[in-house]
View 1 (cartoon, rainbow, N blue to C red):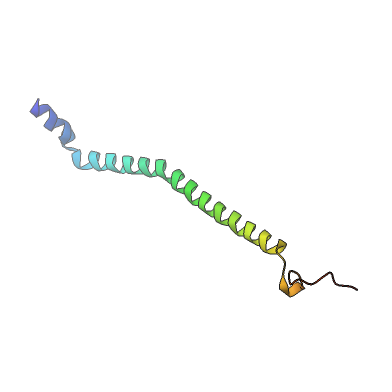
View 2 (tube, rainbow, N blue to C red):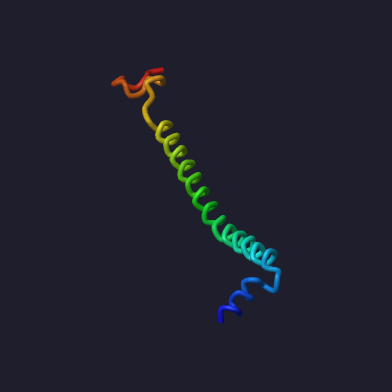
Length: 79
């Protein structure tokens, strides 16, 4: 059994070529599996930030502005 296992890992003398090929294949497979997950996280983070900035802009636009004479206890301006 030990001899057959050694011959399997030796790959008929081609182990120096076969095992790195397996390593590259599984590395690419892992990256191909993980990349969409990282991309999704990044996109969700960007969208949350964009929505937060948009909400803050809307809130600022609807808030009374002392520069426009609003919110200082003044009555309506007469023409």
